[in-house]
Structure formats: C-alpha cells, structure tokens
Length: 112
Image (cartoon, rainbow, N blue to C red):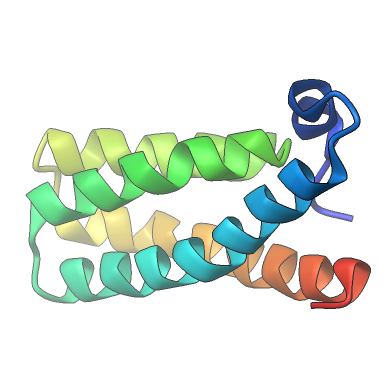
C-alpha cells in the first residue's frame, strides 16, 4: 500500500464522510493536475510546472505519501527555479507512477 491514512484519520476525528470527501476530491483533482503537469513539461512552462506541483504536494501529503511528496516538492522547486526541463522530466515519472498507483489502490479499497 502506497498511502497511509493516519494524518487524514487524525484530521477527520472519526468523520467517515470527511474521509470519503477528501479521497473523492483527490481522485477527481490530482489526476487532472498530473495531466496538466505533463502538458506543462511538454510546453516547457516552468510557472505552470511549479503551480501544479505545488497543488499536488499537499494532497499526497494528506494521504501519507512521503516519498511522493518529496518528488512533488523537488518538481515544485525545479519549476520555481526554472531549472532545465530535462531535469524535471527525469523526476516526473516517479510522481506519475505513484499517483497512478494510489488512484488505483484508493478506487479498489474504497469501492469507487
């Protein structure tokens, strides 16, 4: 399992509707943000890379995905500093793989 709901459970204080809502929003928004990030990389749009990585980061953090959060932070920093786009493209597949995996796991685990 790539995710850990400890942070989310702590915030929710037993509110299952809140947990389901956060997971639904994650499943709806993060894959779209990931697609946008991939497009921004193709277009070499550093500002958009920065913004989307910045948006993805707290979502994966909330699901306890520490390694994925670190990758998102790295992409965010590289985008902000207008680093060589090749450098960002080298890291991006890790983020993409983890997000696709967690989306699949969440859909399976929560019957969505």
